[in-house]
Image 1: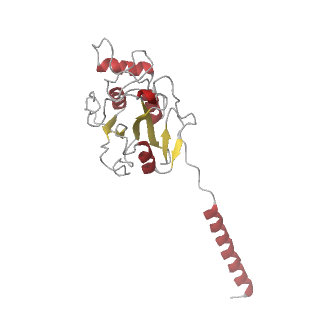
Image 2 (image 1 turned 90 degrees about the vertical axis):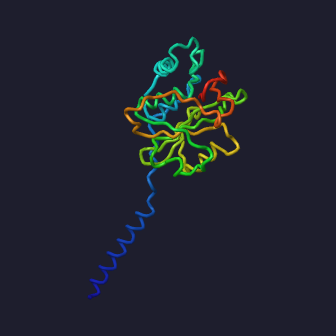
Image 3 (image 1 turned 30 degrees about the horizontal axis):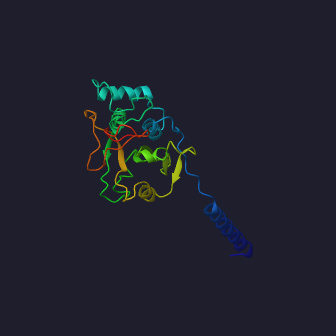
Length: 230
């Protein structure tokens, strides 16, 4: 090989190496943030968790009130929401609402480890978590928040009480362990899965007493006799 050819080959090799090095050192694209988010209004975190999970204004207070009426059509005081009209919808309303969108909802067995496989991270539309409310903690109130993958598969926490909006979750297992510590048996996890059977009739599902002591109260802390509330 002539000296000129050798120099040319060496130059090509260095250029290719430089290009590869530049590509490897280029910053990775930022995770794609969910585009829809609702902040907390009154005691309507069940409404917000539904819309944040579905990434659209899928439900209104009037629609959830109508579901409450469907669940207890003859009740003088509806047990599935606040008597003051500020929300505080219970888990039955949340489940029925998701079922109308072709989604199935199941309780996660808290006796199992909170692993990606056990929460079916690759299959779920998202996760709904019921945790103590930071606003009315002294009254034993509860709060709904959602965890869901973004458009590129990164997981996000969508908590209507967090005015910063969707927050990236780098480690889903660690986040679940933080939200659902083993010392807190009252906090619960719902798995939301796509493609509920078309023939399935939505049923009222009260929170199992074995799982939820004293029946969880809502954001306003009222109506302890109801099933899990926001």
